[in-house]
Length: 248
Image (tube, rainbow, N blue to C red):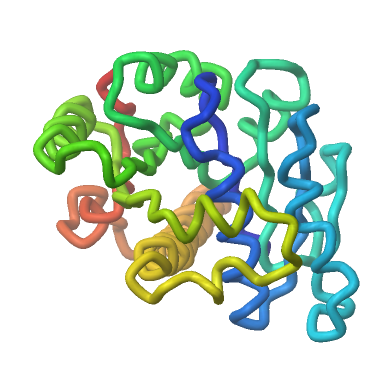
């Protein structure tokens, strides 16, 4: 079953498209099939990854769309990655309500960390089973690490899950802003690429745990005897899968 990821924040310029681009490339590099969907009218995600369709190594493994439909969530792709605009419209709501994970790039300012409660509401009540949204924190090298650490502490104190601290290395900015048809996530220095690869791995692990939770819920509906799933298991708490709502 596809790992369905929506990248969204109501604040612009926080790194949504950059994250969607690099996650797409990492998934392809690891031999996965990917459905990438551009939701933003600025079309940057679409333009940035469109050349991948013509790469022989990705033949039959990469699909790019500019219109999201509910049927897309039944795709047989390994990953569905959706880049959303900084606004709540019908297509954004469709993405939020049907994705497994919502990645919210933020910066250490109040503007990019304000809309969490609204995102949680728009994502639908069914997500209250878990501590969603999952938050990605992105800071560039110009921000003192102390400020970044303070923001992470603030977010986690509210019950939000911070799964990454992604410094915006100059190599990322230079590659994405250029017209060169290069595979940015591979061309990045190992130091710059590592945090993104860690988030990719976290999402794979989270998805397996999410599938286990869904299977248990289905078994309980059918009245089957199953081992009790302890939401307070420390291992699950590490991945933010407690059966409580986020404290916004």
